[in-house]
Length: 367
Image (tube, rainbow, N blue to C red; front, side, top):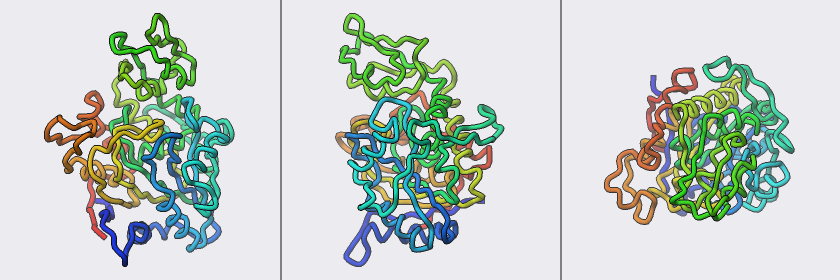
């Protein structure tokens, strides 16, 4: 049986703005059915790293907040702290960055609560009994919410091919120690021929595992925790992942964490994805590269697997934009495999389907 995925394009006019379309998607996807009066509703999003501009605009999220409040729910905006050294590694910096990027209470009409607390140690061990983990560490504030709405910016991702709902839930709501568990199979290596010795990778490394020796960055394997942040921090592209196990493991681990994030919600969850400014890299980067394709639209569903599949399909049907990272590579059918040739993004969807998180079969309904 296929799942229903609702879609609206980027066209707008005096009688119907894009903000209005978000509200309409909310209703058409049945998200109002998961909200009850007085319930605490976690709205999971990515506040964007300092310097990043690809995250979902606060104005769109405000409309979702207003719909939840209209239904009597008590919404709060949430995300978990990052593993790497950026502007969101603890709740103080995280909240400051969120406010700088436009997510202040005065704008949003809802409080901001960092899911895993001040320093990432506030989490709940959720039993899932899967291939990689018996239990996963989910940010406590998100776990204890009565309902969950994940608002996702769909884009490429350097470790799993693309970042969609599953990535937003799994890596996004895993505590800092949970993120370390998911990254444990990542092994970056430095190409001495490409390295410029700028030391940017070392400044972002949370483990202090990188130093510059004779004008070349060196990663100490014993200290490296496998977060992979150095791979996107390097301006010269000198650091790549040397997968010492199949990259599928990383995707499967994220999916298991995604299951943990919604396991106690009893179906009280829904998802809205923005296929706009489809950048090659995650919003965790302190920059946003040129989009790969045009802005396509906004989608919503109660099925995270179907929603991610629909987003991938829509992007892959588009022409590559001039000036993007894929420009000059001809008619690229699979955009994400072309970006990251060693990563088959299909594994995250297959595995999610295998463990019962949803289906890759969907019916796309325009509204």
